[in-house]
Length: 329
Image (tube, rainbow, N blue to C red):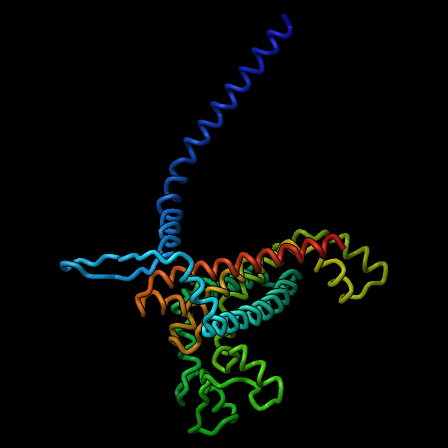
């Protein structure tokens, strides 16, 4: 008798769970449907195009995409193309240098804002303003600053400080390789595509995004128990020692999030580079736009976009493995 009651209770609990799951699915189904239409179907179509020679044709006054099956030829085309690997190097340089600067500046700002001082809430609120500026506006703003004429903002500042003559002007966005006259280092920076222009554009992009990195690091700092710092200070640890032995290990999860998030953003950077330099700095996103919308090769453009996604996945996997190995050690 007891076994029958137990079986009835189990079946009742199972039917209740099924009902709860069906109700949860009914609540999620509108969002899932929107994701299917907005995200997954275009993604699947883009992957289909990447396996085809897809071009726009006009028939009877109407445009359509003509697809000719090519299998993996679009991908192989880029993998053996030297200009593609040059774009990979330029994009990697932009990503690596930007990440390093953003992490350093963002961490310094976060450490300052973690201290008590008068007006800290106002400073924290103002910190987010650069990130709120639209990317196009940010690009135009830095375009005015880097204007290579005497009326450019940065040139005007240099003239005011008497660092250049009153009629002189520096072309900050000139595609001149850095360290080109230094043996060895000049060849490396030329191979990476490191120019004066890309370094100044890194500054413009970092100005906009560093506050977000600072806020993420600041959020991580709020979770570090203050008792750890007090105990370390009692044991005689210096400020530098407390930073490396307490702050950095406790911030590893936040740093991992920043690395993955910013790598995704930087590896497909487009706005500021295209608006100010057009096709002069051929990062992968600019090359993808050029292939798809300038040359009309939607198949190759789609293949290139998926290659960018593959690179980001590989880099994210490396980040996760490095953090896991560090935590195990």
